[in-house]
Amino acid sequence: MSLHMSNAQQETEEQKSSKLPFLLDPGTKGGAVFLSIVLFFIPLIGYQVATTALGIDEVEAGKWIGVGFTVVSLLLWAASYIFRVATKDMTYVCIKHIIGSFIIRFLWVAFSSVFIFCYYRLNN
Image (cartoon, rainbow, N blue to C red; front, side, top):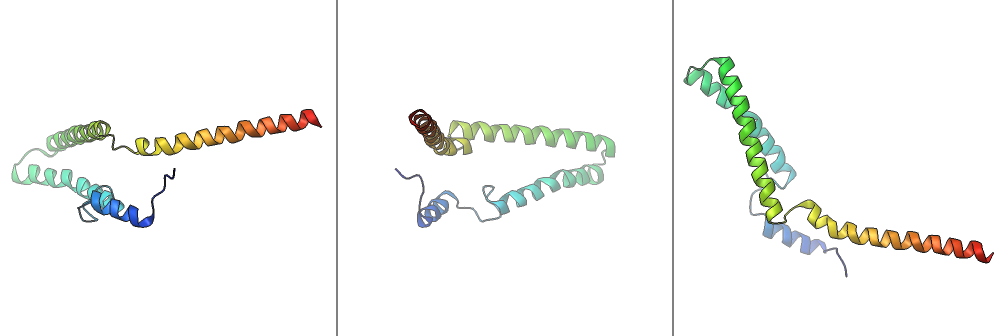
């Protein structure tokens, strides 16, 4: 049984799973960079709006925006983590089968090598 897919199969799997553009798909490097930049600027824009348009004190606005952004970010991260666990769309689930078969093969080779070495030493 082979665990590898051909390049054509991998490309069709990626095309089926991702319908977002490269910069908007958080599963790509471009999407991760774009999302990081957007998440960097959201609190800064919120701070500017709170201090200039709403007239809130700078220190109070900084505290509330910092705490609020941190809490919302952590809640969203936890929700996405729980969703990925529930749907089994996690990296370790995909890699677990590959590593499991690798460990079994490694142990087989290691024990058979030890057995062959001991057999050789006893017979010579």
